[in-house]
Length: 228
Image 1 (cartoon, rainbow, N blue to C red):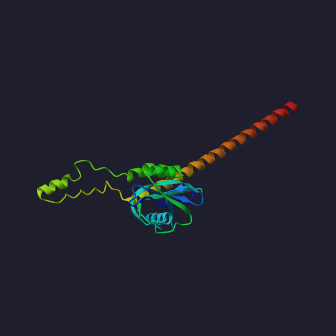
Image 2 (image 1 turned 60 degrees about the vertical axis):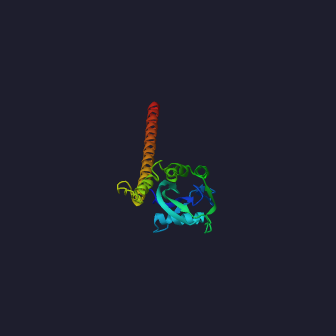
């Protein structure tokens, strides 16, 4: 039987006005460097838990932005899923760190990846988050060209951007639900495969015992025949 999925949340936290410096924290219990994150309290929403954990573990107030994705793994024999949001932290620390955290460091992306203790978090930060941290460059001729043309024409107004269709932008809530459902399904499939493998091993051992017993009985009968 698989245990109930442990739900947690956290943030990829960048410091305001300090370039692309990312927060990593060091835990007291094992000295591991991790992304700021923690388990949800009873009845707490993931996004609220993510903000709370980040404030407690970094000491900085934060603004929460877009949902970035999730990582899943097993902890204490139970499946665990951790949801992450992109966040921006105030430049100055305003809160004391929680006792579970002994250090906070702000590092560039590559250095943050190297500092993290767990390969899964390194992979998540490198592939899922690196793209979100990069600003898309504006193509020459696009920026300012429309404004200049409008000014020459005496209009002085820029055209509003076209709204993206609902199909193109999936709500973050739906994405998070899919992540959780996927994590639970993965955990159930893993437990089922483990259970089947255990049953298969048990059946094999039973057949071997039966075969050994049959062979022993046959040998005993042949021995008795030779005596008679």
